[in-house]
Amino acid sequence: MEEEEKRSESRRSGSPKDRIKSQEPGAKTKGVKAERLKAKGKKTTQFNPGENYSASPMDGPKSEIINSAPDSYRDEHPTSEIKLPTANSQLPTEPMEVHHHPEVEKKGIKEYLLEGLMIFVAVMMGFFAESLREHINEQHQADDYAVNLYNDLKADSAELKEYRVYFKFANANVDTLMDLLSKNEVRQIPSGKLYYFGLFGGAYHVFTPHDATLITLKSSGALRFFGDKTISRKLAVYDELCQNMKVAEEKDNGIYVETRKARAKIFDFRYNEIANDLYHTVLKIRAYSDSGSTPKRYTWASIDSFKKSNPPLLSHDEALFNEYIEMVRSRFLNVKVAASDTLSHHCKELLGLLRKKYSVTDE
Image 1 (cartoon, helix red, strand yellow):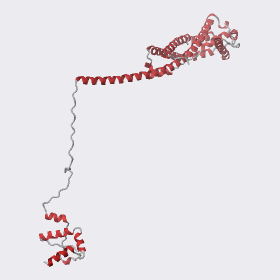
Image 2: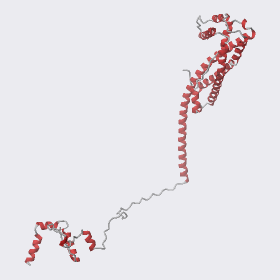
Image 3: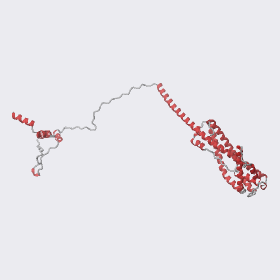
Image 4: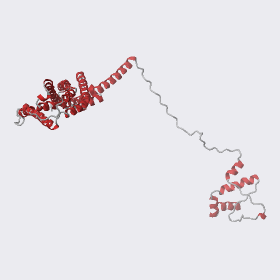
């Protein structure tokens, strides 16, 4: 008994190396493996670091080395299963909270009608607000267009006045020339009168309307900004008259060139220049007479003196005079005067309407 107690105490106390070996990882598992293999009757060889295992083939069969623990575990427990988590395995989840919709109070037909009426009123109010905004914007644009249009028409009016005066004066002098030739022989008429009155057969003046604003109004559809249909209608008529005058002047260009050629066969250009200067004297006299202070050098005496003179003609052939007169008549100077009168009348009407509605004043 005493000897057994000593052996147990020595095992418990043991040397430090023995205790370290017993605490090394795998020490217990090696012992367990050995005991399991002994139970099965298999021969085992424990690995000793101090021994040499490099034996030659003649030393006999190699020692059998036991594999890792999982293989021995499978040998000992062939029917055991190791369960691993899979993709289809259910993970622990918390219970979901279910939200129940509150019960909605049923509405009556009156409430639905009231809501529909409110939506309709809101839409209509938005529509009216947008229409009012557009109307105010169009009114501002109409005011701007009215000012620009007024200035254009005012410039047209001044140019039409000059156009009308010029062709009315030219037509009157052409009528005087035809009257002289119809009542007298060419040689019986002072050549100064023929030069002066014959000058106006080649009268030329072009009316160019200031239509930039009108073109913009037509192309952009902004004519509707003028609430007054009278203005829109008269603008359309005025534009049509301007286009008609433009077409007539384009047709007259060819006749005008031929008229100048016919006149060049009769009248010497040097005396034509003198007659032309006298015409500008007449214009000066008229301009200064309107202001009430006519310079002394601009008098009718110089014009009367030239009419009584006899500068030489290139030809006294009545056939050439007849050709020239027919060319002049083909220009229809009196039609130009009538067209400018009509256009000037419509222009003044439009100016009056714009002044009345948009309070436009002369700048």
